[in-house]
Length: 114
Length: 116
Figure 1 (cartoon, each protein chain N blue to C red):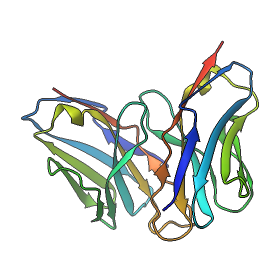
Figure 2 (figure 1 turned 180 degrees about the vertical axis):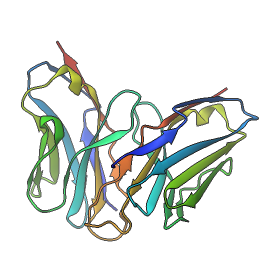
Figure 3 (figure 1 turned 90 degrees about the vertical axis):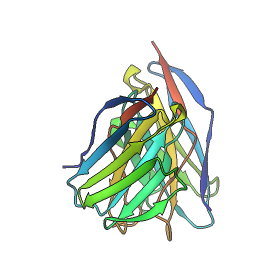
Figure 4 (figure 1 turned 90 degrees about the horizontal axis):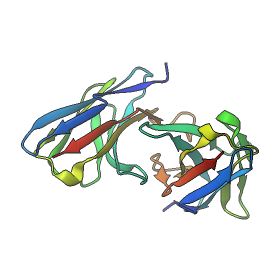
């Protein structure tokens, strides 16, 4: 069965600093990987996804993630944090065959200080 | 149109009440989902409908009763809930089968439920 581990339940950065949210996956086959963002009192919005086309994936709002098979990682980055990036971020995985329903990580709260 | 809508946005109900949550999408998706989400936790899958048939029930108590009247609508009927059922209830939809593979789910804004 596939799973994801998000390191750090909270990440705190200053406005303008680099954002790095970590996600490691466990899957017996190359998976599909997703990053979702959830703003307060809202549903989940897809930031980006990896579906084996390119290892560096660019998403919305200036976020990107790199799929590294050797490290089983799919970390989310943004060069410069903005106050509006403060939210809950979820990494998710679904296998390339079989069940199509994603498994979510526990989430990371991003806190942005002025 | 890539929107999933949910009504109501907020709901307060007593433990003896009967209420329903509604979800609608017009993307032609043939899979629809109900999730329950507690604060600062990931969504927990409750039910999956594919082609209007219940395909997955994650051992959800019978006080939650899903219904899919047509390919665009999904309801969740609530009866005799407990205070611990208070949560954000999210609806999602997706292509079924996923096309292309790895096709994502689209989430609604959720209904925040408080059971007194």
